[in-house]
Length: 640
Image (tube, rainbow, N blue to C red):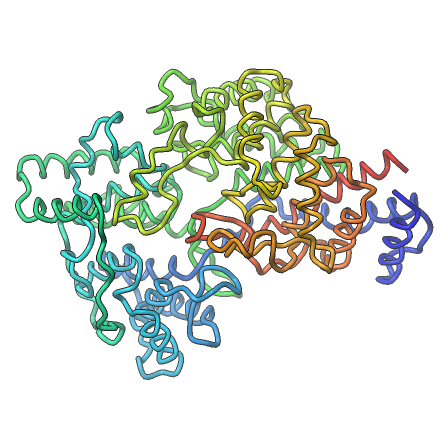
């Protein structure tokens, strides 16, 4: 660390009363003893007695609106749940009357329609000021007619939209063999689990009472007509829906129900995520499964585990991330120099090792000869281990002293190698889930219905290979080649599961360097220049989620602790610990740390479906800064 950098950092710390300026060694020691220690201590304090970490996974109010609509559909909605959900939804409305899909994001029409409907269910008068404001935005934006397909499906369930005006997805889809286009395994795991129950709902076309109508949200405009082959196909399917082959239809409904029931998780969910969960409950109910049936009862009761009640209100998580959070916390604490045999880390490893998935799942449809050995995102998601979690699990276990870790690591790395796609890259849940036909269906007015290889997942896998001594393996070399091809023309990498190019670049650069790429290689230098060019004046980094749809936002946004840490991790891996960009990034984290050791982060930096659905991982604001600061202190100590 240069004298200038050390003096600036020490001065910042001194200004807060936490240190005296005193040169490079003093500044580095102070940073480790104050900012980093406070953050690591805070993180340690969040560990559950069972060994895991789990931060809230915040999304948007459609989760709560659809929870009320589901309960209304099943006949189990209570006054208490309605009041609590209404209070939460109301609290999230902005001054202009709208709701967004992420903090400080643009208003979203479909989210606002669903929130309005939920508040009307909760007893809010359409003449109330906040309802008038919401309605004005809805009508100005095209009304119900301009909403997404899934919102209109919810409305059709209660007679507020015509089923005949929705795209058709027949349950006979379940019969298509896996080699045939548009079979259920052509869809991403989260999409196939949603589509199969929706084919049942679409075939049976229920209309149940809502208790009011939403006629005031209709604009009277016509939705734009669809053109092309798939709109022609949709018209043909509409004709078939009028007179389906009864025996074939009934058999398809039974097979689809069996498919759904076979995939219910131990906690009652489907895939551990909201969309397939709610649609599966409705589909089974339509087929005669009452709310007291064991499958239904288990599914309904399981929703309580995903419900948060605290001083902020009652709200539903779309999914939960305990495995992901736990292994990121383990890595962060090791970066902060916690010993490999520290009781907290050993306890965490105990829990993680118990979470290994030893049975096949949908992933094995494409990889039937690959032995199980992965980890999932959730507490109970045994049907869907994923590559990203497994890679981070292996990285964490490799740095903890646990006698059972080596064998689990071997199984995990073998599973990773078996999950490579043909082009050498890695998707999250499936291999070679790349057929794009599903994207063109009128039914799919959102983009994330397939699971192709992505830079962030491929990078985490490559980093795991390097750490585990597999850096020279064919799978590792092909992953590296995939990442070389995937670099954007500006020097960055796209981030599928985090926002966005800052996340992708923050994942790829450390992985490449770990795999043996020279930090002075032009690929790395271009990435460094991109990060330096997109650093904010306050020293941090931020990228707005609008960058997924609007390229003007790439690399631009309000500085956040997690995104600043991602950039620092890349720059440190590239050997930039002496650079001005790193120094300013570290100073940003020091300056914005809360007294309790963590950071505030209202802005969302996680991604569910790019362009449509976003996540605020409440532990990201802590685990990634701990890793970045820990690696900075280590790098500075090595060169001082």
